[in-house]
Structure formats: C-alpha cells, structure tokens
Length: 450
Image (tube, rainbow, N blue to C red):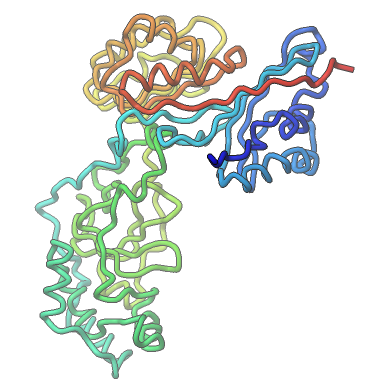
C-alpha cells in the first residue's frame, strides 16, 4: 500500500484565518467595497506583517497556528499574499522557501531571484590592489616583540620552522616576520592545553588562534545576500590605510575579541603598513578597521582608538535619486558609478538615458512608476542586478528586453500588484532555465465586513 504524506496544515485556510482577520480588520478599502490586499512573512520564531495599530501580543496570538504548522512540516518560513473581497471571499497564496530565492530583507517583497548559481555581487569578488611601496611600520620590532612575549610566557612551547613553513604552504602565502616570531614563542593549542592557550591570549591581547588555525579572510563568507550586497560598493579614500574589501588572501586572521577577527594585513592600502593589524567586524560585510600599525604595537597595547567610516555606500560609486538625495539622474552620472537607486516621487518620472553605457554601472533599483521608459534599461550594458516593479518587469518581458547580463533580480511589490507576482518571477527564472517557485493557492471566506 502506498504511503501518502498527510496534508499540511499550512494549506488549510483555517490555519491562516486569524492572521488574515487581523490584517484585514477595519481596512478602509474593503469597507469601500474594494478588495483588501495583505502580505507578509512568517517564520518559526518571528513575523513581518503589514497591519496598522495591532499590538505585538495580538499579532503573536494570530500567527501561532502558522508557526506550529511550520514546525510540524520542518519549514523555516513562508511568504504569503492574500486578496480579501468585500463579501469575504479570499484567495491566499503561500510560497515556501526556494533554492533560487533569497528571502527579502524588507517586507513585503517576494525576495531576490538568483539567476546564476553561486554568483556574488562585484564587491565580494574584488581582489586587493597592489601597493608595491608598502613596507612594515617603523614600530615593527622583532627583537622587542620576542623579548616581550618570552617575558610574558616563559614556559610557552613554540612552533618549529618546519611547522611554520607547513602553515605557509597550507595558506599559500608567506607569513609576516612578526607572525613568525609570535608562533616561534608559542604555537598555541586550545585542544591539548586550554590554560596555556588562555595565557598566550592574555599575553598577546586577544583570543589567540593556534598556528594550525591561521586562515585568510574569505570575502565570499561575508556576503550578506544579493538584496543588500547589490547596492553596496567598495569604499576607501585614495590614502586609506586599509583596502575596503570583503576579504583578501593577505588578511591573515590570527585571533578574535570573541566575535570579530583580528588579522595581520599583508595587502594594505596606500596609507597603510605591511603587517599592520586590522579588525574585521562580523556585523559588517565590507572593509576592516586599522587597529595597530604593527603586531609589535598590538602586543604592547599601542592601538588606534579612532574608528573611521568604512561603509561602502558613498558617492560617486553609489547614488540615490528622487528620495531626498540627488534630484536628477544627470547628477548621478559619473564614470565610477556602480549602483543607481531611483525612488518614487510625485511628478515626472526619470529617464535613465544619462547613465546609458557607463562602464561600471552594475545595479539599478527603481520604485514602481519611477522610470519614464523602462525599455531604456537595455542601454545599461553591464547590469548584474535589477530591481523593478511588477509592471515594469511586464514591459521588459513582453519586449524581450530583459538584460541577459543579470546574475540576480527582484520584483518590487506595489499595492496594485498581487498574487501574479510569483508567475512573473517564474517567467524571469525561465529565461535562465532556473527552477520555478512553487505557490499554493488557498481559497476560503472571512465573511462580509461588519
């Protein structure tokens, strides 16, 4: 006898009824004999609902049934959209997680469509620029560093030259002379001698990793997803001490403060020193902070207290038009422009003709109704990410004008757009022969408004 999987309560209208009643209660549209449209996301431990005035405790009660269903089915989260007619007839679309969709960081969008498997935005692929003139800081003192460490760790067991050479071979890079001194004094082994490892960390000034734990900072591991990453750019002033990268084969992580990584930097910026110590913040996805000019300074506690802005979202690489920033696309046009975001404003929509052909423009996001002629997108020859409203996507699809250079895309949801958004997304995915998004349509009745 064939075993049939029992139906999921996620597909039961009754599971969703408390959520839909909460979100449509008192809606002016439904009261005016027009359909109410609601949307959101619910995970096992949280939710994002577009409703006004309801207390968190009320929402918490409403979503409990959905969260129990998610736990039973082993589903981390779902997105949903529903249309409630004035007589109560309701159509609900439930979208389960898909390997081709990155969940939206901002409600109520479907998420980001990943068109090229494993692709990353350009900033997370950047390699360090060579700085041939970079040299160690004057404070890098090998004798002072070794003497200080041996005074603090008189009984420590250091690594042999052969062990250090093996670590270099594993990493594919030559360690700085200061790092070699550090590990010749103490090789650090948290597995076999926890107390000795703690003493070594106290002596150096951080939670020190062992020689076998040395690694380089991988930019891809810091990727925050296309939804955020596509709108970021590598920052840094021309005289920056640290290159504003996501990672570098020359950032050798040797310790931490319990969350962030300390690394010796062998690929410094024009204003930095070879072998300087930097802090890679786990809450940031690009850049790092200069902590000390040398490992010697770091061990002696001579560190930089000042923190510089290292966020990669400044002009001219990133420009925002029509949302209280720049007032025209012409003002944003620049040979170094990488990211253009156009917000909705009352009045005449924007032409993007002024940025056509710019060599580095890779991201365009535009609110629904913000573009005068969406077909001008075809003049942006290097786009890797495009976010548009559903109606603009419809125009591109019907004209066969979707840029084939894209690696990811997003459909910006507008109040007038609704359940067909998933169908539209699937048309985009089909152009790259990607798996389709599965949406379950559920019908029920909430009854007429009071």
